[in-house]
Length: 416
Image 1 (cartoon, rainbow, N blue to C red):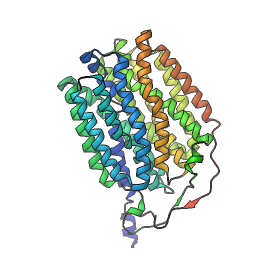
Image 2 (image 1 turned 180 degrees about the vertical axis):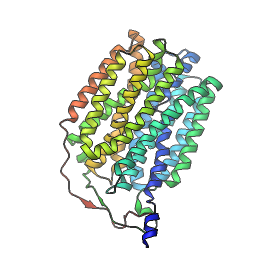
Image 3 (image 1 turned 135 degrees about the vertical axis):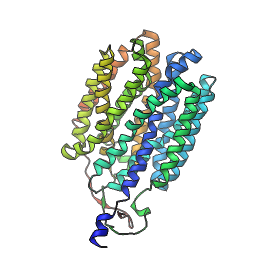
Image 4 (image 1 turned 30 degrees about the horizontal axis):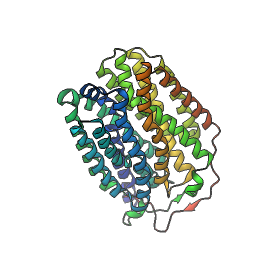
């Protein structure tokens, strides 16, 4: 290869980054935007807040199960068929919500959507880390993919609010499901499991992979347990906020459009946090980056506890979004850095499930607590204390002992 050809080559991993970014962006239609549907559903059916929240609980239970299964299947068979199934199931489930006439139908259709959406995090996050293991700008690549969720929230929360106000919540569900399917199907052909799937070409060089601990040992390792606890607490907080921030804000007399914008801004402000986490962790390490993010989330939750006006709500969205973004990238980066690449999809899926199973019930519990006490004060106080505990635990977290192993024969990293 000539020097000119070498300079003009583009590492295919960046195409994978772009496609994985689109996949994670689709999460803005599900996890980040459910709260926008909350009061229209409550108004239509006269359901209590706990009943409306139970639909999201069904979604998260299915999401958690599918995250483990999709991660394992992706490790074994590659990401593309898993993502295609994801687009079909989640798109269908969301679209069917337009036909809801009872709470059980609502739960069933969101459960179906959750089965599909479970692949939209573990699969792209694991895939991009495999592609960039041992390469420069690996943190940046992971940060870009993680930022897709924030971009999706910025786009879809206001968009869905517009669709509801203009065409009704039923048509909004139908359009949302169709868009989800289109995004995943368009992105999946570009997502390949590893450099070994790319035909031989110029610019090939070998890369070592971090050593793998057996999954059984990872699951009982103290560092993994701490990461899982921190992930669970932060996801619980996130799920509560994604469902109840809009009704909490409107209870204070804040306009629904302002509250929906705050949800979108949380996603928007998470984008610089997600991108910052990669370079920051390169300087101070994944452990310190996670700890900083958790203390930041604790402060943000306390701030929300005392928020009573629009500017305080927007300030919360800025702070929480930024630290949530740092947390998201650094938590998943630490799993790959600490425990290896070969079963990374399964490990991220397990971590996601451990986080989302309790998170699945917390929106329902928060709605029940509000129905009983008429206030979210107890919910936000408990949330802040748990976030503080998780931040303190990460201070004592340590990396496991490791032995470096090469990639399997034929797994090389090409550039194009």
